[in-house]
Length: 209
Image 1: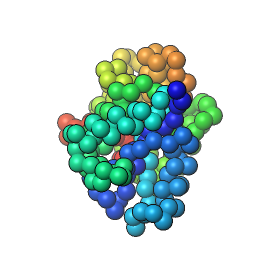
Image 2: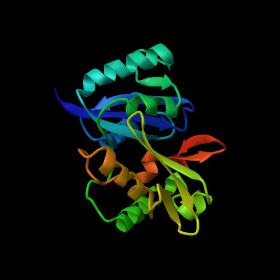
Image 3: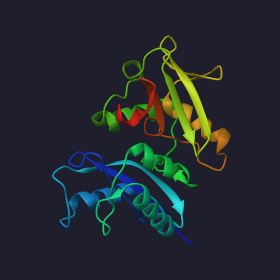
Image 4: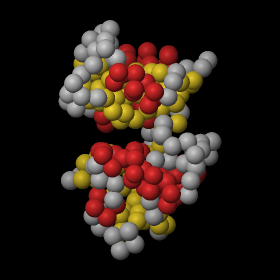
């Protein structure tokens, strides 16, 4: 039994449709392949929504595709495209044991990590907590199905308060959650990719702000 990655790609040219597959390479390498392939390439490039390193990735991809084909629209049975929401796919990914993929592999202290996230993800949208969140707004991080931490953004402290503890960054918030509820996992985390915030009573990914 080997391990590999399951990934979820989106494309602005295909609203509501996601590419969901597996790779034995890293998700960013697979992304480059998809964006350079002449077999079937949309006008705009794919982007990684999330990916997860899992054991027995080939079998898990087969099962995942069967579930998606049963409950959503499989655009083409011979391809990896499904008409489905990110929230639905993320729920299925959360059911599987494994580690969410983050591009940075070297641990850094929280300030350096947050600075690098801001540098490399500026094009994706807001990465400044003072502009992304309002005072009292709820922010959550979930591991698996039911291990959820919910904190509140404190504009005076400029950070997240959860169970009377203060976290300066989203990554620090997520990493501490892992250190308590997933002791087998590495300590680093990309909070912008993994956390969600509440907007008009709905939870949305902070990655897409």
